[in-house]
Length: 225
Image 1 (cartoon, rainbow, N blue to C red):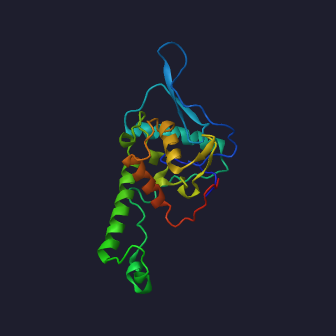
Image 2: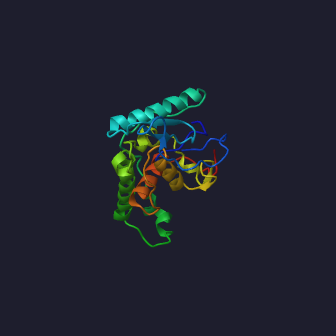
Image 3: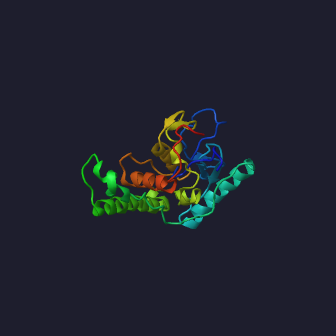
């Protein structure tokens, strides 16, 4: 997958190396005569924009906004790849099988004491539950608080192109080193047009769980662009 793909919107986008400075916070911009205000929606690359004179109210309208942004991006970047096919829809990758902690020498070496089969099952169930909740938020414009009916999956099906394994890294949109949650919030404010979430917001925690779950098995490469 192309290393400079954008992160999303939920949830998460990768910054482009050609961007030079931090963008100012988006605000509705007024064009034309009085009463013809339009709202500028910016893609995660910090350059591609669409001006809306009417805010969409349903998923179909939000998807249309996302499609316009992505169509522009593809036209301007014909040599770059962006994954769009939905691979698993609402499902998530299963967590790692921890059955090994119950076997042989591994069972004797546990720092926190002896574990049972019930412990192993609980770990898997709760981890997957967190990721599934993140999938629900990621796919819901209402849960995200979008004012234009856009949800993260519209640009990032199954959390594709989010690259959580590359964080922390310098994000040119912000002009500083960012964590995954920082980029999620940037995308919430810009493509999704929603309010940022606190770090301990259950929705933020769930989306981070979901995004990481979908990249399970990918080697860590913090700082990579």
